[in-house]
Length: 316
Ligand code: 8YV
Image (tube, rainbow, N blue to C red):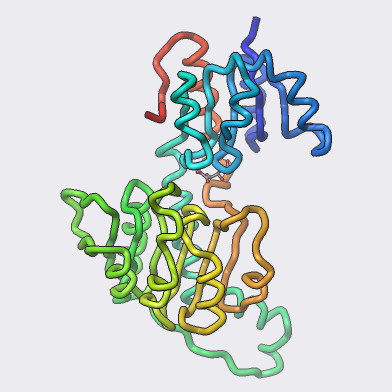
């Protein structure tokens, strides 16, 4: 008998979905109409042995408590901040994620956002669409990237991939994270505040956790300054969103380029109304290639677990 796996969200890869059906008895939560999801879940929960979830849905203690036979939670993403790891550990439930395979695409999106902010891409796009070019309306010059400081908050795999790309654009890379990294040429700032003071662009690439919650606060935003730009491709929880909206509105922060938000998919109307922002809907890893690779890693971890083999990418 195939193990019952609760699938919280579909993969865009048809091949991944076919493999899931081939190897597991899949129960698709995401296919249920919203108002029926709770009753449907109560019906399938007693048989569930594995869960496929996302970095955003994660695994809350409440859902875990409903799954008496669950053995493994496979996260289709790198972030595990939405998984109650204390609860999974207490139950002896294995957790896996998808490190490595999404690094390049997330770093590419960080640079896409940084460049969009630097060259004011949304305003230029609107200018052409509105016929302002033909009407001969003025266009403001933007600032070059070369020589500017790109501060990277969180200098792990993704942070370093962002650094390599920023250097290719002639930027100077500095970083901050609590633990210094040996053997990297980029200087480490003594604090996040010091990094913000030194940076023209501050890119957030640290994991979401209670320790990083709202660490990008009013003081850090003020230190980044009226000519500064905040880029966030990590988690909305790291940034005090109210302080960010206030700083952007007052012009004490120049610009923000954001892929992640405090309460996704809800983006505050006050943020959407600002013209010194560029906003994308949490799509750092959303390419055909990366979503396939992530889904494949999820399938491989689930198969390894149910075949009694070592997990490929366990979360410890
Ligand atoms: C995904 C992410 O969008 O990897 C992460 O932690 O936030 C993203 O790659 C998310 O997991 C949804 O699948």
